[in-house]
Length: 126
Image (cartoon, rainbow, N blue to C red; front, side, top):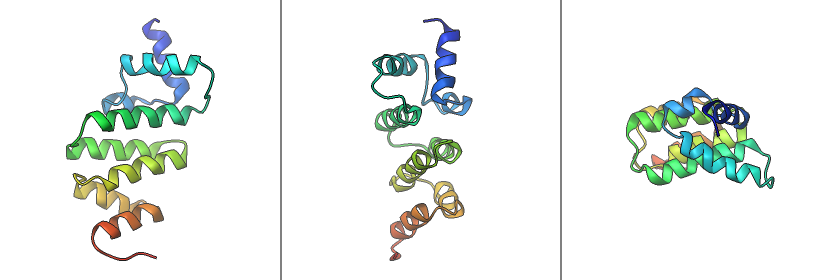
């Protein structure tokens, strides 16, 4: 598969340059995802982005503050609000999350993220 074909496939799945800059996606990741895509069993592009995120997270812990922030921002910018919210929640729950991530979660206006932060700080939530 040519580099051009890989980039077209990345665009099809919704991987923006930020996914590459954060280190979540590279040619090897795209090749693995392409194999899954070609099976024709799942055409939900957000599932592939979430899979790439989860694989990256599993192999790069603990995260540094800048990486955590970048991953949180990937979730915030994702066109699929539910999947993006799940990414942001995963990052907000990490024990190594930074104050930057906590502040971003609180400022997001997303109730589920605000609850995660409050719970982590010992506040009870309804």
